[in-house]
Amino acid sequence: MRPSQLNTILDTEFHSAQYQQHTPVMLWGPPGVGKSQLVHQIGERHGVEVVDIRLSQMEPSDLRGIPFKSGANVEWAIPAMLPDVKRHGDTGILFLDELTSAVPSVSAAAYQLILDRRLGDYQVPNGWAIFSAGNRQGDRGVTYTMPAPLANRFSHYDVDINLDDWVVWAYRHEIDERVIGFLRYRPELLFDFDPAQNPMAFPSPRSWEFAHRALRKFSDKPQLLSGALQACVGHAAGIELNAFVESLDKMPDLDAIIAGEKITPPGEIDLQYALASALVGRAISAQSDESQDQPNSNKVIGNILAYAGTFSQKEMGVMLVSDMLRAIGDEVFMVPQFSEWATSIGDIMLYD
Image (cartoon, rainbow, N blue to C red; front, side):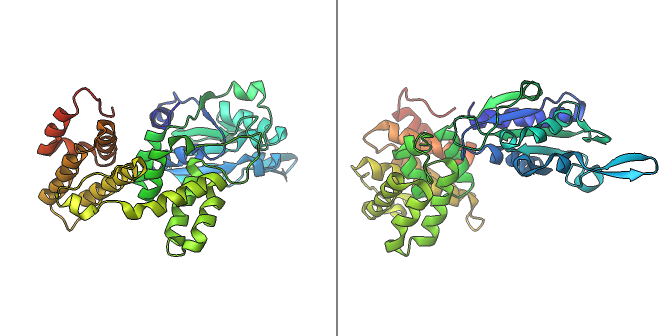
């Protein structure tokens, strides 16, 4: 299931915990696809704490607590890491990450916590959702087969890779537009992992964020940039991204396009992708820049829309406008040039 759909599911499950209709959720997927980030985004969106427990690093006593003598009886000290209303709030997310990497004795200790929302005398507070994530067998991670009794305590979802969803995330998190443009040009490289090869570095949503950081740190050190990119996303993808970046000196003048001047789009397809991503970035800047007034923002967006109609391949213009719509929202529809552009593209559909 694509991340945008899983966001809705996790949102709904979070709200359902407040009226005792919550079903614990297990997210499955290979390394680097953003499973953990999906859960943390729900916490950020709702302004609640995410108690992140890495079960692969636990012993059974870490989760169950330590026994101590109380009179003639033995009681259990409740681990401070577990959600507590006084410390963590009335609502929140208990996130059991790396569940499939936990040794069986630890996953067994989690049975009661996940289904019954309790562990001995400890009770998960009402209003707290329980989410979990793990790698599948065959992903070259340290994994154990999930026992049927534990599996039956979850609803299960596979996290799919979707470039459009990643692009939405990338613009919102100010990922370098050169990375976005490159992946629009080479979409199959968003995730390229072959477990049989056991690579150290490989393309994934996580490692492309590393490549973004490398571009910010090493762009002024060209003798190091190619190696830094290869260290993040692997040999082949790193070399391709570096070549893509080096070709951008042929890109048209963005300021002239924003100003509404007549500029011919480049003929090279890779430059067209890079140009489209850069123009979306300019639209975001125009919308968010508090020093600019609304009419000027509309002018920038209008000139980008006008330019979108000049691509010889209408699909390139559709991609540009669709990404801009994802990034800045319905303001695109308010600009007069939108209706002119929409008429020019005929039956080519926009992103829904």
